[in-house]
Image 1 (cartoon, rainbow, N blue to C red):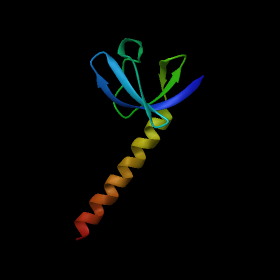
Image 2: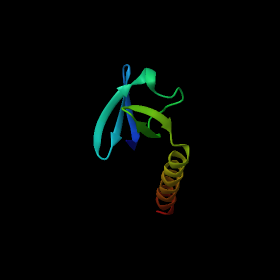
Image 3: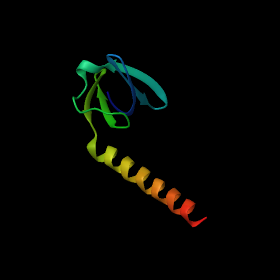
Image 4: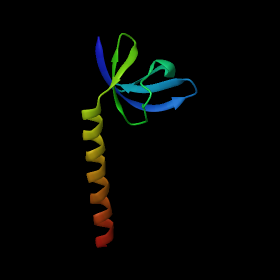
Length: 77
């Protein structure tokens, strides 16, 4: 079964991924080399199969827009 999740953190040789509000951990050795916190990943057959580059970029862009909006509001005060 294919699921998607967001990399929450690294703990030693494990990768902790949030999937549907639950935390799951996977061996870091099986994960893609360029994996980083906040990336969206595809989990298949009990392992991190790939990074969802498009969804990761969408989330990064959304967060950047929110941050810029907050900074804009603070500078208007």
